[in-house]
Amino acid sequence: MCLVLFAYRSHPLYPLLLIANRDEFYRRPSAPAAPWPGAALPGPGAALVAGRDLEGGGTWAGIARHRAAAVTNVREPGHPQPSRALSRGDIPRDFLAGDQSPQDYAAGLDGARYRGFNALLFQLGAERELICAGNRHRPFAVEPGVHGISNGAPDAPWPKVVNGRARLEQLLRDAGEEVDESSFVLPALALLRDTRPAPAADLPHTGVSAELERALSPLFIHIEDGDIPATATGGYGTRASSVIAVDSCGRSLLWEQNYSGGRADGPLRHYTID
Image (cartoon, rainbow, N blue to C red):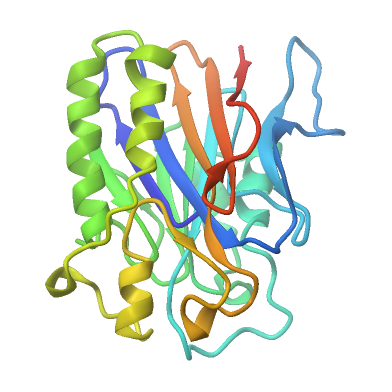
């Protein structure tokens, strides 16, 4: 994931509402959101629903009973890489498949084994329900409110984070009490499809060229192969948009729209874990 916007304890019926874009190289193979084979537990429904990174084996965002998780990478070109780095997609996958609390799971992560990341870990009713883990900061409990994470520090004032948070707050006001496709999901997906770049004066400085910084600044990214010399690797951009909701009864819902080359690829998928 490269953009996660989320509202924690900001809605009367949904303790967690999360919308996110996964940005990745177009050539990297992945499978859309679906119940994971081998992750079924006793009881109705699937135990884990998420997209699957077919190269690393993990996921970018998903749900389980009473639980949700997502991960973003930290943009830090030139930063030393760990030897035999683990896939950051393992973090949400293993949290969703396990039963540890967000706090305990975050405390057990060996951050030195991963490249830079931020991970959101949610479990309804836990002592600390929503933890932001990472290896560029200490894990911390997220305060109620509307927040955003891109490829920097949590709530860093990048244009897409500032813009996205404000628009998510407006979506919450417009949606009312019930979250469904017409009132929230489709408007959220439209928000996530915003391709407008940020003004040059507002761009962060993460160590890449100004041209690439601008191309990466929209909420929805689409860079064709060769548009920018540093991306001449088959193209790069938003591959999936996700909407996740966990209600006060513990029901977890996920909607996902996949993209290929900047265009919708397949239907809007929807799963519920009761």
